[in-house]
Amino acid sequence: MNGKWKIFAVLAGVFLALATNSVDAACDTSKIDICCHKDVLDDGDLRIIDDFVADAVDELVKTEDFTSIAKIRTVILSRSSSSKDSAKAQYEQQFSESAHKYISNALEAAKGLTPANNRFRVILNLLILVDYLQEPRLADLAIKRLDDEDNAIRYWAVHSVTNPGITGKLNSGGAANLELAERITEQLKGLVESSSPEILALMAGFAAKVGIPQGEELLLQIADMRIKRYENWKVEYELLDGDILKLLDSKIPAESASKPDVAHRFGQLYSYVFQRYIKGRDVLSDTQKNQLASVLVETEISYISKRLKVAQSVVKNAVEQGDYTVLLQEHGRLLGDETKAGQLPLKLNFDYGKEPDGSRRIAPLALPEPPKELIPSTKLRTSADNGSTGSP
Image (cartoon, rainbow, N blue to C red; front, side, top):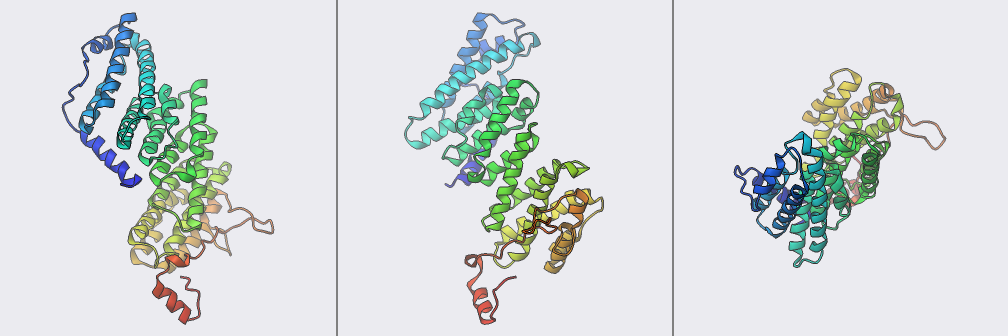
């Protein structure tokens, strides 16, 4: 099973299990349930919390059935906080310290498990638990596995440090949260080139929402990587670029003179979506073309119309009618060509970098023609017979 489908299989198992109505605790919860409702905790209560976490993590590691594992996680999560405000801080500190200790020990022990599928199961389920707990003090357990060779484990490690709960806490202020946000972001920057589209989507969402300058740097790095993949005709899962365009748009204020770098990436990436759809019409799969069409239309309706303050539907109509000439004309009108700047660059006050002579580019970079290995052999033969290059 490849990494992509392994992730979806794991997710399906998790959500199916969580849909079960009854939750039968595999570990004893009678003592911890009393602690959850106490106004003041003593040393004995703290030991009860520690013992509960130790037993629950041990049970999670030993259990193999996905439904039972999900129930155990639910039991742990439901007892991770006190119902009493007076005891909440003390309770949660002990719970997180115990969780860190026992999950860390379990992850370390999992390294020696055989066969490999046992190692995978244990590490994956522990990382999902870390993700559910959404506790910044557990983040280092996931950070250590951000570059795991297994794509599913890497996915959940990234998910654990980028989920909305963690992001919200990182944005809540404090030196420790700021330092952790910077640490996570810098770690993610090193993963951009090697990450799958599913993981890139998590990283991009985090980058747009975390409240530090490095977050925007990460988002631009992801956009630059996708732009480069388009140039090399090696981009995968084009629907991801609809999300990236949305996130880039969210970083551009109404008066965007202060965000030309973000607007530039938006314009160039959207241009490459146009150009790939037009130049790749004879070489891309139906799935690829449908994904590109979806990005083109959704971006026009949701973001171009908003920025230009005029309802736009030219792209949508041209896609529906298969009119590539109109699409090319609309590309030039919106984004610019060699003769004039486009409406979007004029509105958002950006350009596409420098020409060799030092002047500013008013047109987005042109997408290279599809490589020969993508062009059907029949089209190559026809082009050769006609003395042409076979370009669209």
